[in-house]
Length: 464
Image 1 (tube, rainbow, N blue to C red):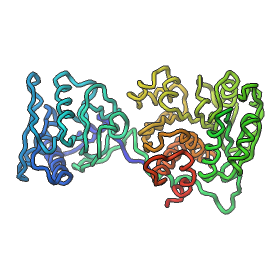
Image 2 (cartoon, one colour):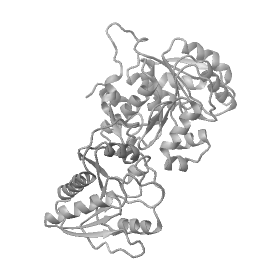
Image 3 (spheres, helix red, strand yellow):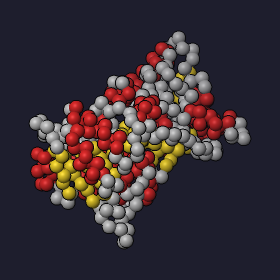
């Protein structure tokens, strides 16, 4: 259910454990690059290989030699000396062997100019190990970086292949075996097999033991969000869902979600739930397996106080999403909490702009976990899941999910899995995976809306 994602340090450890020579590894790596260049760009006759001064450049030089042996025309361009303009020629394919897994920070001015030349050339680019300029350990891009069509990496995929913005530049990633032994990695990529860990309804069970979810949310003009969460919980195999919101919203709930039990909550003149709702919510929580709070809740002093007290007093797992994340503060919480922010919401939690979060996603999610001491899911392309004392898990984040309401669906899925008794980190990762695959299997390449996911979720969970 987890594929390893290597950092630069972990790759160094794997290489240092190899009993043979560096030259042996370089020969295998370079041959793998050349083989993929020949197979994936079969019509290409002319290649330019841009080589740096390190081992990545060495891999490139081996690839150039093998391509020449295959009767291809090859031009090798050395990055040094740095004070001269490079002639990249007019190749059918350019092989980027400038920087490898050890690169971090911002390229020097000469390297920046060379990377810009590569990107401006217009030829397909095959990068060796990672696109030059991408940090292998974080996916960060501090300056110029190669925009590759394909990347051939060695031994295992790197964090930078799957965490944005680096993931946007890697293109199609191929892994070549160069004879290293696997090692334990801190971070990993979630696979679909994680869904096999989701408990199914049993013959001796009932609607309550199948998972009872309470969804708290809704306000004027925002009734759809909690409805989507409730329906997603049902479609994720929860047996019982209670939908609680302000009195005006309950009338909409009755129309949209026939199967859920509805409970009105005290509200102010603006239709926002007040702190007086705490007693009702805690009463509902006593009979439930998990609670989701925030979808469409709205923002006021009353909703903020409600969220604070529910998180402090409810002794069951809680998914915290949407408006419940507004001005959220850490607390001494009695049960697992799962925060599911997008980059803007997470930025507010740690005092950073959304643009900073997008550029430093690994650091941002780890800082949030450290501050709140709970599971955090950072939405977006390459969804990140982190928890205290563990590495970061990377899940999908299909492009079609970039539409209103899909986050509310995700909240309901995670809440259903928590209600079934799953560990919070595992439930969150499984929820993100089910969400991702539902988007893939919706069969809509464009125009997908959040409710399209609902009918697909049972099929995904059934393995069809």
